Image (tube, rainbow, N blue to C red):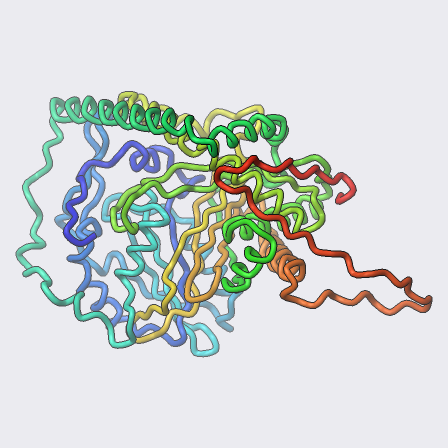
Length: 516
């Protein structure tokens, strides 16, 4: 963010998060951060206030043009007051994780006030074991997961003593005065609409050119060939799972964590990437949950959508620069190593075929439409029931700080990310790495998935199974039986490798109906 001058006008995808939002679909990203001690409120507020000059957008609010002729713009808030953005709340006794999750769920269910800059922080007191916590919310029109994580690194400190650079070069008070009033004349809005349409068309042309150039590569040819083999699965996966039902605005948020080093060891032993390990654990958890609801998983898939970062910096640029990678993952493979291989194979095929580029191309074409039509489109999407599910779940993996972070001298222990959900997505999952941990956050509709805590438990169980399959844990012994056990040799653990960039893709693992 240093030295950058972000555009005042929202992009098409930024504006879409404003158009789509309603009571049933709160569209903010968030994080629940737990610290090793209570956060001193006044000191924390002063620290954030000293850094706001590093984040000018946090003093700006959204202003829409007449009739949505053009995209909204970010304009200085003449009534900005940091006390309207940082609040002090207390968790009920006894102050455990259950009470903290309930408080976070209540806060995350509320829409953000568009009459002020779209961010807020709740300093949470009353936690047991001498802990402290904060809940940070940022509207999705302001930041995606990657830029949100970068903003967190600005808000927090890398040392217990704090950051001197936050105060160094802080602008004088007069520099915070509002600038000239925005020009929202009809002519300006029309000119903005034409310019944004041309920019979207140019972006679409660039994506098409990049896609065409990639066709010459052996990796993409192999990917397209593998994609043809996936078409029956992609068609079969267009069905609703138990949690794909119309959502209310009430949310439930819960979390868990796994060891990042163990995820890397699983990858090294069984193949794939760390993201494939995460997707495997979540897929196995979904399979268990579907069976818990009394439904079969035989020959069924979960259609995951994974956000893909498109920015070329380290997340310093604001706004949304993402596309999406869709992948259908089998729910009926019982062996954890085989499932990881199936997940790694399918994600490699979709990445090699540049499926995320095709999604970005469609988004660019939509962005070429006049903003009033885009506003009408996004406003009407939740009103139209679809005969089949376009997707079942969003699972996003956001890299966080590898080093410990601090707030007012307190060390951050864990940071649990929240990703929005709504429409017919009853539950979504976000994962963030931080200081040797993988922090999972599950956001669910309180009425569609009231038992979302079971998914959290199933992820832990699935991760443990992957650890045992990779040789990181000893196999659990079966209960002793009166009869003599048969002598059988240990079953070898398969160690498939992911497809190489220029190598033919392996045959897809078959589904296993017996797993049901």
